[in-house]
Image 1 (cartoon, rainbow, N blue to C red):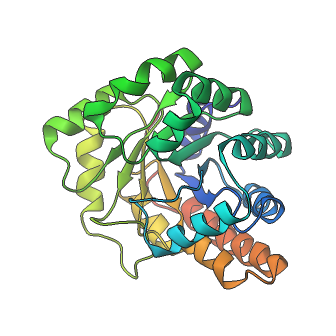
Image 2 (spheres, one colour):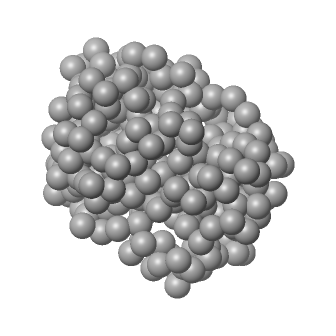
Length: 275
């Protein structure tokens, strides 16, 4: 199974940041969602961030909340999500990070969840509503399963907590570019460069930036700021929402958009750091 280290090391040699699209698993239904993710891989995704739908996604804005509702109503749950991931891995071996909520992990059973996630082909699990203070509740199970750990840093994370997060992270640091929930923004936050610079001074693990990246030029800007990857969610999920009755159009639009983002990352002025 391809690891984060494999991918980020190769991208470092190419002096390019990773393209990391986010999808809600099962939005709007299993088969369409799988076709969308496969198209994203074919368009050049380097890593996938997949959300398992949850009824109370407190870190997410309206666009992804509605996607969660669509996916849940289509019958998606954690066990079906594992099967979804297995089918994605059959299409191509690409690192997969889950972004989800702790209630789902607890309900499934912690040790069983991380073991089954690994067996399905998952590389890491980011629990959006778990702070670094509570990470010990899951880190043992994460390590026992052989998964990487991924935690979030936000613009108002204190220097001391950044150090804690950097020390506990083995996959990549998910850097939130703005205060607030997920959602497309017209302009990129001006705090990104400073945030990336401070994290780079604390750790050698890749630093990837998400929340508010909705245009190819945003992705290029975070790469130029030194980020190792650009995570794009709400813009993609919005394209799916706008074409619920025309899956073929949704797939074509998402694929074309990601191709543009990949091209922007390929011409960024500053490549990611070696890992």
